[in-house]
Length: 204
Image (cartoon, rainbow, N blue to C red):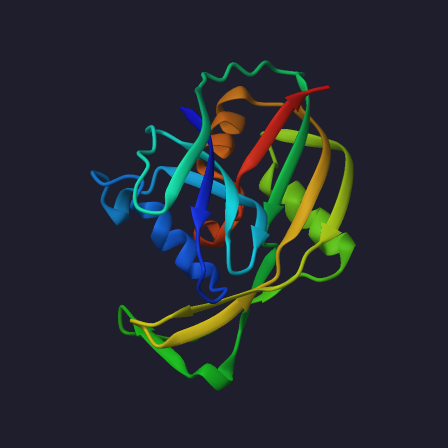
Protein backbone atom coordinates (compact mmCIF):
# COMPACT_ATOMS: atom_id res chain seq x y z
CA UNK A 1 0.00 0.00 0.00
CA UNK A 2 1.00 3.63 -0.42
CA UNK A 3 0.74 6.61 1.91
CA UNK A 4 0.92 9.95 0.12
CA UNK A 5 0.77 13.62 1.03
CA UNK A 6 -0.84 15.62 -1.77
CA UNK A 7 -1.47 19.27 -2.48
CA UNK A 8 -4.50 20.13 -4.62
CA UNK A 9 -4.78 23.63 -6.04
CA UNK A 10 -8.38 24.79 -5.90
CA UNK A 11 -9.48 28.39 -6.35
CA UNK A 12 -13.16 27.56 -6.65
CA UNK A 13 -16.03 27.36 -4.18
CA UNK A 14 -15.87 24.98 -1.25
CA UNK A 15 -17.69 21.84 -2.40
CA UNK A 16 -16.61 18.70 -0.54
CA UNK A 17 -17.64 16.43 -3.41
CA UNK A 18 -15.30 18.23 -5.83
CA UNK A 19 -12.32 17.01 -3.81
CA UNK A 20 -13.29 13.41 -4.46
CA UNK A 21 -13.72 14.03 -8.19
CA UNK A 22 -10.30 15.66 -8.44
CA UNK A 23 -8.59 12.82 -6.58
CA UNK A 24 -9.85 10.30 -9.13
CA UNK A 25 -7.60 11.89 -11.75
CA UNK A 26 -4.60 10.64 -9.74
CA UNK A 27 -5.60 7.10 -10.76
CA UNK A 28 -6.21 7.31 -14.52
CA UNK A 29 -6.45 3.54 -14.96
CA UNK A 30 -8.85 2.85 -12.10
CA UNK A 31 -12.62 2.84 -12.79
CA UNK A 32 -14.90 4.57 -10.29
CA UNK A 33 -16.49 1.26 -9.28
CA UNK A 34 -13.14 0.04 -7.95
CA UNK A 35 -12.09 2.84 -5.63
CA UNK A 36 -8.96 1.70 -3.80
CA UNK A 37 -8.08 4.78 -1.79
CA UNK A 38 -8.99 6.62 1.40
CA UNK A 39 -8.11 10.21 2.17
CA UNK A 40 -8.36 12.91 4.79
CA UNK A 41 -8.01 16.65 4.27
CA UNK A 42 -5.38 17.88 6.71
CA UNK A 43 -5.30 21.57 5.83
CA UNK A 44 -7.44 23.78 3.62
CA UNK A 45 -7.13 27.41 2.56
CA UNK A 46 -10.07 28.81 0.64
CA UNK A 47 -9.12 30.21 -2.75
CA UNK A 48 -5.74 28.44 -2.68
CA UNK A 49 -6.17 24.71 -2.17
CA UNK A 50 -5.74 21.96 0.37
CA UNK A 51 -3.33 19.30 1.57
CA UNK A 52 -4.57 15.80 2.07
CA UNK A 53 -3.26 12.49 3.34
CA UNK A 54 -4.08 9.49 1.15
CA UNK A 55 -3.82 5.75 1.66
CA UNK A 56 -4.11 3.79 -1.58
CA UNK A 57 -3.55 0.36 -3.07
CA UNK A 58 -1.81 1.91 -6.07
CA UNK A 59 0.65 4.78 -6.29
CA UNK A 60 -1.09 8.03 -7.32
CA UNK A 61 0.24 9.86 -10.37
CA UNK A 62 0.44 13.66 -10.22
CA UNK A 63 -2.03 15.26 -12.60
CA UNK A 64 -3.22 18.76 -13.45
CA UNK A 65 -3.00 21.10 -10.48
CA UNK A 66 -2.13 18.37 -7.99
CA UNK A 67 1.32 17.79 -6.53
CA UNK A 68 2.60 14.78 -4.62
CA UNK A 69 4.53 16.27 -1.70
CA UNK A 70 5.67 12.96 -0.26
CA UNK A 71 5.05 9.25 -0.64
CA UNK A 72 6.07 5.94 0.88
CA UNK A 73 5.15 2.33 0.26
CA UNK A 74 4.43 0.17 3.29
CA UNK A 75 3.18 -3.20 4.45
CA UNK A 76 1.13 -3.75 7.59
CA UNK A 77 1.76 -6.44 10.17
CA UNK A 78 -0.65 -6.42 13.09
CA UNK A 79 -0.45 -8.65 16.15
CA UNK A 80 -3.10 -9.79 18.59
CA UNK A 81 -2.89 -7.65 21.70
CA UNK A 82 -0.97 -4.90 19.91
CA UNK A 83 -1.74 -1.42 21.28
CA UNK A 84 -1.85 1.43 18.77
CA UNK A 85 -2.58 5.13 18.85
CA UNK A 86 -5.10 6.11 16.20
CA UNK A 87 -6.66 9.12 14.51
CA UNK A 88 -9.84 8.92 12.47
CA UNK A 89 -12.14 11.46 10.87
CA UNK A 90 -15.48 9.75 10.47
CA UNK A 91 -19.19 10.37 9.97
CA UNK A 92 -21.18 8.70 12.78
CA UNK A 93 -24.76 8.25 11.65
CA UNK A 94 -27.87 6.18 12.20
CA UNK A 95 -30.49 5.19 9.64
CA UNK A 96 -34.15 5.88 10.40
CA UNK A 97 -37.41 5.46 8.51
CA UNK A 98 -38.90 8.67 7.10
CA UNK A 99 -42.45 8.42 5.81
CA UNK A 100 -42.22 11.93 4.34
CA UNK A 101 -39.82 10.52 1.73
CA UNK A 102 -42.44 8.07 0.48
CA UNK A 103 -41.81 4.39 -0.09
CA UNK A 104 -39.88 2.09 -2.40
CA UNK A 105 -40.91 -1.32 -3.76
CA UNK A 106 -38.47 -4.22 -3.76
CA UNK A 107 -39.35 -7.79 -4.73
CA UNK A 108 -43.03 -6.94 -4.65
CA UNK A 109 -42.89 -5.50 -1.13
CA UNK A 110 -43.25 -1.84 -0.18
CA UNK A 111 -40.80 -0.28 2.27
CA UNK A 112 -40.72 3.16 3.87
CA UNK A 113 -37.71 5.10 2.65
CA UNK A 114 -34.89 5.66 5.09
CA UNK A 115 -32.60 8.62 5.75
CA UNK A 116 -29.26 8.98 7.48
CA UNK A 117 -29.07 11.34 10.44
CA UNK A 118 -25.91 12.33 12.32
CA UNK A 119 -25.19 11.18 15.85
CA UNK A 120 -24.47 14.38 17.76
CA UNK A 121 -24.15 13.16 21.35
CA UNK A 122 -20.70 12.02 22.44
CA UNK A 123 -21.98 8.84 24.11
CA UNK A 124 -23.75 7.80 20.89
CA UNK A 125 -20.62 8.55 18.85
CA UNK A 126 -18.48 6.44 21.17
CA UNK A 127 -20.93 3.53 20.98
CA UNK A 128 -21.00 3.84 17.17
CA UNK A 129 -17.21 3.59 16.95
CA UNK A 130 -17.11 0.63 19.35
CA UNK A 131 -19.60 -1.18 17.09
CA UNK A 132 -17.43 -0.49 14.03
CA UNK A 133 -14.45 -2.09 15.77
CA UNK A 134 -16.46 -4.92 17.33
CA UNK A 135 -14.55 -8.19 17.17
CA UNK A 136 -11.55 -6.51 15.58
CA UNK A 137 -10.25 -4.17 18.30
CA UNK A 138 -11.17 -2.71 21.66
CA UNK A 139 -10.97 0.96 22.61
CA UNK A 140 -8.78 1.78 25.61
CA UNK A 141 -9.32 5.53 25.63
CA UNK A 142 -10.95 8.00 23.32
CA UNK A 143 -11.13 11.73 22.65
CA UNK A 144 -13.89 13.03 20.37
CA UNK A 145 -13.63 16.38 18.65
CA UNK A 146 -16.55 17.73 16.56
CA UNK A 147 -15.77 19.50 13.28
CA UNK A 148 -17.57 21.93 11.01
CA UNK A 149 -20.17 20.47 8.69
CA UNK A 150 -19.12 19.66 5.13
CA UNK A 151 -21.45 20.84 2.37
CA UNK A 152 -21.61 19.24 -1.05
CA UNK A 153 -23.48 19.43 -4.30
CA UNK A 154 -23.70 16.77 -7.01
CA UNK A 155 -24.58 18.75 -10.12
CA UNK A 156 -25.33 15.71 -12.28
CA UNK A 157 -27.88 14.42 -9.78
CA UNK A 158 -29.05 17.93 -8.84
CA UNK A 159 -28.65 16.97 -5.20
CA UNK A 160 -27.03 18.79 -2.31
CA UNK A 161 -26.53 18.07 1.35
CA UNK A 162 -24.11 18.02 4.23
CA UNK A 163 -22.34 15.62 6.54
CA UNK A 164 -21.26 16.20 10.14
CA UNK A 165 -17.81 14.66 10.70
CA UNK A 166 -15.99 14.21 13.98
CA UNK A 167 -12.38 13.31 14.76
CA UNK A 168 -11.70 10.33 17.02
CA UNK A 169 -8.29 10.01 18.69
CA UNK A 170 -7.17 7.48 21.25
CA UNK A 171 -5.61 4.09 21.85
CA UNK A 172 -6.94 0.72 20.72
CA UNK A 173 -5.90 -2.89 21.18
CA UNK A 174 -6.02 -5.34 18.27
CA UNK A 175 -8.23 -8.35 19.02
CA UNK A 176 -8.51 -10.11 15.64
CA UNK A 177 -5.75 -9.57 13.07
CA UNK A 178 -7.77 -10.41 9.93
CA UNK A 179 -10.82 -8.35 10.92
CA UNK A 180 -8.66 -5.39 11.88
CA UNK A 181 -6.71 -5.60 8.62
CA UNK A 182 -9.99 -5.46 6.70
CA UNK A 183 -11.11 -2.38 8.62
CA UNK A 184 -7.75 -0.70 8.07
CA UNK A 185 -7.86 -1.27 4.31
CA UNK A 186 -11.56 -0.51 3.72
CA UNK A 187 -11.97 2.41 6.15
CA UNK A 188 -14.42 3.14 8.94
CA UNK A 189 -18.01 4.27 8.36
CA UNK A 190 -19.72 6.11 5.50
CA UNK A 191 -18.85 9.32 3.60
CA UNK A 192 -15.49 8.07 2.33
CA UNK A 193 -16.01 10.18 -0.79
CA UNK A 194 -15.89 13.22 1.51
CA UNK A 195 -12.63 12.40 3.26
CA UNK A 196 -13.93 10.22 6.09
CA UNK A 197 -12.86 6.74 7.12
CA UNK A 198 -9.04 6.83 6.92
CA UNK A 199 -7.61 5.14 10.04
CA UNK A 200 -4.15 6.51 10.88
CA UNK A 201 -2.09 4.39 13.28
CA UNK A 202 1.11 4.79 15.27
CA UNK A 203 2.94 2.83 17.94
CA UNK A 204 2.10 3.68 21.55
